[in-house]
Image (cartoon, one colour):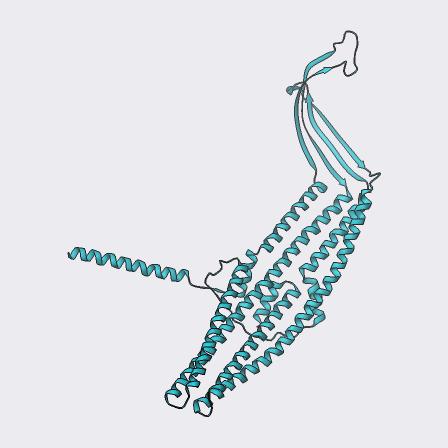
Length: 449
């Protein structure tokens, strides 16, 4: 019996240890990931489909450029070997002599050799190759622009989550104030210095604030879901923000200098400029279609009636080609001119758009900074109003209507402050996108908050 009891006790201990170990492992697995803004941007860049597609377009353009380079600059070398066994009908070839057989053969011959061709002067192919290089550069700039858009979107989603977290904190603070006010009303009611209406009013306020807290938590979870989707993470995985909503003044900047800097750095504008250079090279290639093309050709090999009797043969020739009639060139020239005209209009419109983006972001920054100052003052006054109203109710000089009203005013002041700070940070991120190189600029602006 004792042995059996010891065995049962041992098994129970093992099961308990396994359960505790599994519980600790599950707790470790469910530990939330602390996510910084830089981490979120890095994950989003690695997972976003637009960025991956832009990278594929670069590879495709690079492949086209290599094909153009091989055709314009590199020689073509071919190897050939054959063995023939044949008969010839001389009469069918118009050869008929007395005493000559109508069919000769069979006879055989063998050939092994190499041939090569190299363009020496081909202006059309040269400009086409240069146009292809501009296309590759355009693809790389499109990839950078796609990254900037991903960075901007991710920063906005992270900011949205920060704002939602700030609202949860504000709602939690209001619930704490309602708890304190409800306890005070109950204590005063028990002491006979407050009415049941005061207690009921405090209970209603507590219920409203509790409901607001639940709604704020739900909005925060939804904000995290959107952020996780952008980062390619499993929706609903444990996640918490390592950074909170905060306000820092951004130094004043000169508009004209920022606009010029943006034109030099914006990948979308530079992509259009590269596309324009490609069209110019295509126009030059179109004109060069009428220029002479110089090439050199050669071959070397052995031919004979048997493999052992091959005799060396070779050919070396220079060749000049002229285009005498090519009506297609005129149509292509009109197409290219039309594309260039349309592209110039797009570039001019984008220049105005970039300047508008920069000026709008600066205006929003200035306005949001003023709003933050006013909202901060309103928040301080609302806190003071709530303290005074709670003191008056505690001293019995007023009922708790003033305190509850002050709580509502504080909630409004907190929301105004959160909106102002969020608007200021969003204006920073919009300015970073407008200036180009958004990843670097957003990291810089986020550090200065």
